[in-house]
Image (cartoon, rainbow, N blue to C red; front, side, top):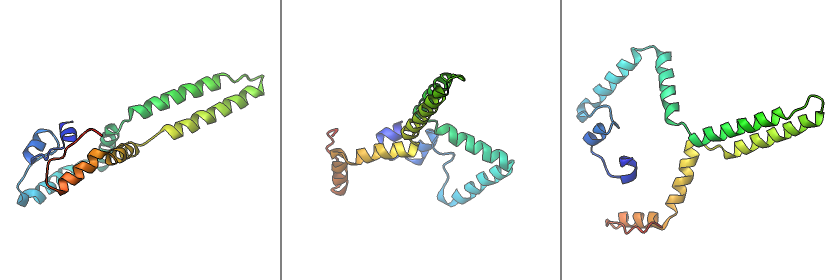
Amino acid sequence: MEFLLCADLIPAERAFEMGLLNAVVPRDQLLAKAREYAARMIANAPLAVQATKESALKGLYVDEDAITQVREAARALKAALEQIDANDPATTQVAIATSVEVLTKLGKEMRTAFEKESRISSAIFQTEDAKESHLAWREKRKPSLQGR
């Protein structure tokens, strides 16, 4: 959060302390260090490495809003299906119509993390503070931010 909210330039050593970097090496040793990491990775089972990477990345992008939306949709679908009476075909039609509505709504509500971030960023870039920040940067001065 410090990195995201303060927007400070962070020296490599501080980024390492924060866990954002695995190592800090002189420029002339960078390629050798990268090759060292690559050699350690390819020494392991390729499918296991691939699965571990996929699992870690998916874990980073768990979207609690989406999970809540899916759970609510599942409950609504279950409730709709429980209303079906085998002796009354009309209840089947109602359950199907309700299920279509639930799934259509869920599709509209679901947003990827990128879409959410993009929507938030777009709104921020339209603010007076964003314009002032850009102007101040161009004029090499500290911005006068107003929270607008």
